[in-house]
Length: 119
Image (cartoon, rainbow, N blue to C red; front, side):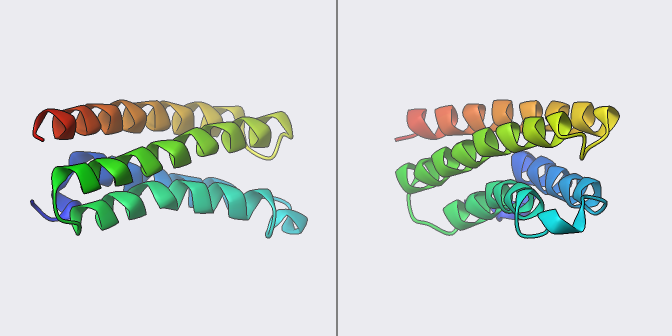
């Protein structure tokens, strides 16, 4: 198993996380322990779970962490929608981040499928 930083999906998820941190920097201060924290936690959970999965033995273990990352991606999708509807995030930022998220979800799905066939 190669290092997590070599995985394209991890690189894309890390890039998405940086974008979410940047986009949430201007959120209302009252949301620091609310939506800002939820967005950042859900987003950073994606590459973190990929990193942890890479450190596990066997493809079934790694696939489990891919599944957890996919759950975090779904959570992030909702929080981004909420931020847009509350007008905390600019429409252009929402579009960009949602597009990146869609790409990460596709890559996660493909990775999980490849791990399933390698069992």
